[in-house]
Image (tube, rainbow, N blue to C red; front, side):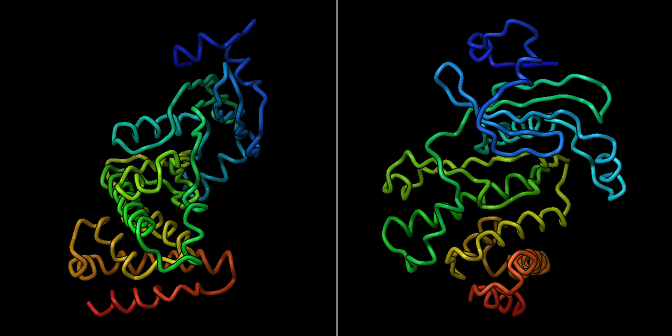
Length: 288
């Protein structure tokens, strides 16, 4: 199976088998693991990303099955995830092509091609100065609030429609930095969710997977200078409830997400997060 954007295919010069040619593409390598490579390449003046899958091998498949995990054997999962996010109107990568061949799951070859998201910056980089610049004011304060509400809406939309990311960190949101600061402050925000390789799609998102996503997001934002008010804003936007209601009705969820975040922080930095809002949040939840 192979599906390619018409314009992309028309500009693709191949003297032989097109699938073989695509699998042999060269460019700037961003990640290389056993059986998988991610690179950026140029064609007809445009920049693209391609994820190439060469087969994970039976050893990797059996390891995942023994751990009760569904093995990811190719690019199909990311291809389906991009299509699902498009249906939900969640900003993500623009799909250009997908291909797969072979029946043996250990040796199956596949690829997914997307347009390069130019003029973007990861939210991890965009937000990291907030801790040094706090308290923010003016347009930057409005941008922070708009971003919090936007990311909360994305998380809520995914989880309410059976989607969880499994790598839900700030670094996997790319903010379009083309708009001016005043335009961003007014809400002209495009934050594209990337790295959809491990996305799971079901009818409903189990609570433990919602907890893992939100915990990961909280972990990745612990050192960017968020206040308790910022976190409460996210909680209200995500839950669709007033602060009092979500602190009361969703108490176990928020405490579990926070515990997940602290566990990730401890594992990476071998210490507790210094964020003053962490204990304040815990006390606020437990009061209810």
